Image 1 (cartoon, rainbow, N blue to C red):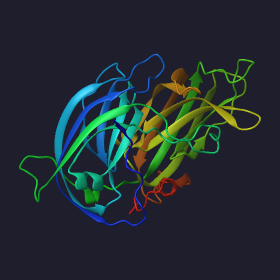
Image 2 (cartoon, rainbow, N blue to C red):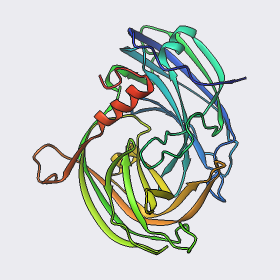
Image 3 (tube, rainbow, N blue to C red):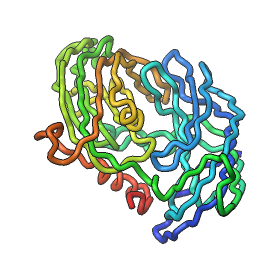
Image 4 (cartoon, rainbow, N blue to C red):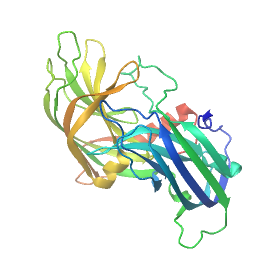
Length: 336
C-alpha cells in the first residue's frame, strides 16, 4: 500500500518533547528517475533540518536499490510539532550528488505512533516560478521508498550511541559570499526550428534568481566567461539547492534546455564545486535526458557584514524567500 507523507501541519502548533531512540530501517527504493542513458547510483541521507543523521551506502547503477540498512540514533529536545525527519535520495555522480526525491515524516507522527512501516512516494522539487508557468502542477511520481521507524522513549542515551540535541538544528544559519564563474556550454539542445539557440544561464536559490549571464545569440556552443559575486544570508534546510539553468531566450519568455542542481550543504562543506557538468532536461512525459555540458565553478566562503570579501556585492536573504515558500505550502514556524 502506497502512502504519501502526512499533510502540512495546521496553524495551531504545540511544543513536542522528544527524548528517545530512533531505530531507522531503509529497505529499498523503486522506480527512481533515470538520468539520460545512465542509471542512478543512489544512497539515502536522513536529516533533521540541515543536520545529517544517518547515511546509507551507495549502490551503483540501479533504479531499484536494496539496502536493508539499519541504524539508530538518540534524539532529544523540545521543538515545534511541525518539525520533520527528511529522507533524501541522492544520486552519486562524479562531481556532486544529484537530488532524486525526498519524503518528510513529521516527528509528532513518529513519537505518537511509536512504529511506522510504510512505502512512501518520493516527492519531486517544485517548479513554480515565472519562467515555468506552463509546467504541470500537482503530484509527480518519481519513485518510492520503503521505510520503518521505531521510536523508543528513554530519558538518556545508551552508552556509545550517537546522540543529538535537535533544538540546535532546526535550520542552517548562513552568511557568506557565492562566487560564480560560468565559462561555456557545449552541445546544447536545439531551441528552435533553425537548429540553434539563444542561450543564457540563470542561477537560483529557492526559485529566486541570484545571478544571470548575458544572452548569446544563435549558437549551441556559447562562451560567456561570466563572473559574479553575491552575498547570501539567512537559513536553509538540508535539501536546499543552487539551481543552475541554461535557457533559450525567445521573443516572449524562455525555454529550459538543460539544468543542474548543486546541494548547498555540499557547496558549503567543500567550499568549491566545479567542472564540466552534464546538463539534464525533462520532457513532457517526465523522462530525464542529458543534453550538453556546462563548464563552471561555484565557490562559497563564510563572511560577515562589512568585510572586504563582501564589498559592494548584491545581497540576497534567501531565508526570507524560503520562509515565504513554506508559508505558501502551509508550514509554520520553521525559521524560529
